[in-house]
Length: 88
Image 1: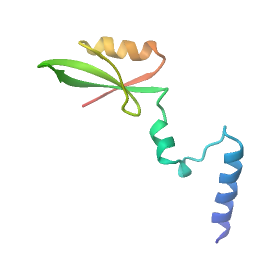
Image 2 (image 1 turned 180 degrees about the horizontal axis):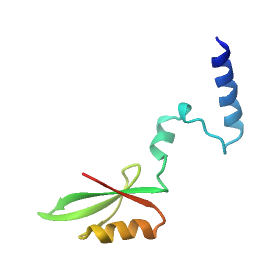
Image 3 (image 1 turned 45 degrees about the vertical axis):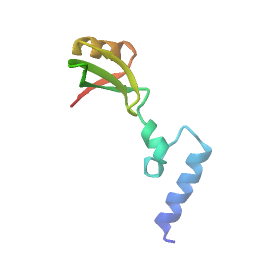
């Protein structure tokens, strides 16, 4: 094991002890999926019964709400103190 690998492992062990420090190179799949969930939401156009509506999803893909207006969708996301993003 080279010095860099030892140093990286030492940092990882220290980060695990101090939960406020996270090394993004060592995130688990579940940690990566939850990254930004409380800060970001995305809005996408979908069809329900032939009507075009706007679905709001958390960053991890969890459905949150549906509205018939994109401005309302963005306003709802901002009201929850989250950053909206429009996706296709």
